[in-house]
Length: 76
Image 1 (spheres, rainbow, N blue to C red):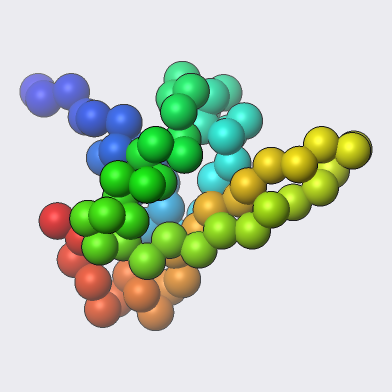
Image 2: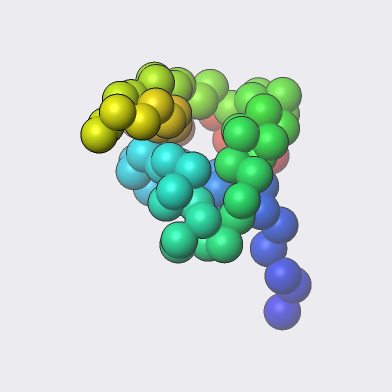
């Protein structure tokens, strides 16, 4: 069995339709550099949306892929 790369893990998460934040990436997948993965996936052609969110005085980004984009692109 081949070990998944961090980019593959994040891609699969996003393609489920669920958003992801840096904290989620750390706690669920032990991935500490989510922005790097997002950058590389965007470079590969994924149309990843993002929004800066403020919660309890802290700012962070939330990333997601629109369902319509999932059906059009294969993201290989």
